[in-house]
Image 1 (cartoon, protein in one colour):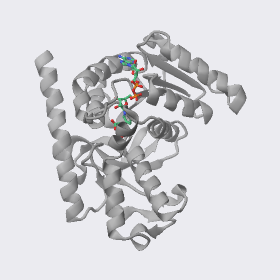
Image 2 (tube, rainbow, N blue to C red; image 1 turned 120 degrees about the vertical axis):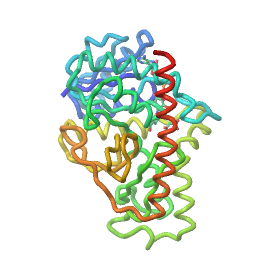
Image 3 (cartoon, rainbow, N blue to C red; image 1 turned 45 degrees about the vertical axis):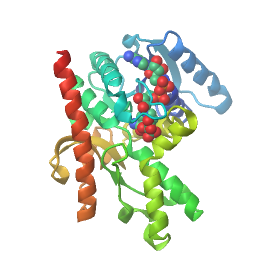
Image 4 (cartoon, rainbow, N blue to C red; image 1 turned 90 degrees about the vertical axis):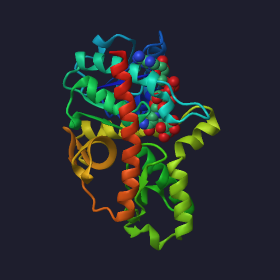
Length: 313
Ligand SMILES: NC(=O)C1=CN([C@@H]2O[C@H](COP(=O)(O)OP(=O)(O)OC[C@H]3O[C@@H](n4cnc5c(N)ncnc54)[C@H](O)[C@@H]3O)[C@@H](O)[C@H]2O)C=CC1
Ligand SMILES: O=C([O-])CC(=O)C(=O)O
């Protein structure tokens, strides 16, 4: 299997490193626009192979998409990360242009690839890649839900003093402060989380999760990369190994949840064909209202992208 990761910065290089270290693909091509940057990162990951013991080949290129030809999966991480004081939406004008040019090159050389978008603002950059590639929603979708649920699971594991491996969770909506956590569907080793933790503590964890990206931006001056890179690699793994994993993924809803034509996080089955199925949960009134708020916010930013595209046409 051949996987390309576009953007050899913090998230892209971490994703490539996880893909190589866990031998998820046998060939990993890292692409960046900064001269020599991807080549250096790929060489460093390859030189770690004898120490850790893996044989996935990593190759880096500066803007040479011929080297990415016939990739099975492409992960797009190119674009600016936010700085303290910024929202993800503030990145739209720069990152839309980057995601558009990158997607054009990706589909030119790998027309059959499945594309996973990571660049922010995530839901709208996934929409941008969808518009540019012309691919069906099953083959172009975004990574956010695995990261957001991982943060939620990590906070819960700490509060309950249990292994994060035993916490199962799902959330929905946009990747931003309007994400929709679903504590009703959270279990700890099969036990509903509400039997193990009080409402106030759970609400505080949900709130911390919603602003989890911002917490890290404040601490580091730039956004997170270890968990995001690993989350994108986990999606690649589900596809290349046809695992049919159940994950929350950013996908264009086409009537599910009564929503049409908006990119939002929803639980799906992820396998060899990309999105194998969108799972429709029976949401209660409160959850439906939260999802509607999130939909409204993402749709506004999608409309802003449409207006930007019209203005530059
Ligand atoms: N979806 C999610 O949950 C997450 C999304 N992100 C987003 O991922 C993106 C990348 O974040 P980082 O890796 O931390 O940033 P970074 O600045 O470390 O890396 C971005 C890389 O993209 C490269 N790049 C820029 N234009 C390019 C082009 N046209 N072609 C190829 N490469 C290009 C840059 O040279 C740079 O190396 C940001 O937009 C960030 O907001 C970050 C974390 C989580
Ligand atoms: O917060 C950011 O800007 C990056 C991101 O999406 C995250 O870490 O959730």
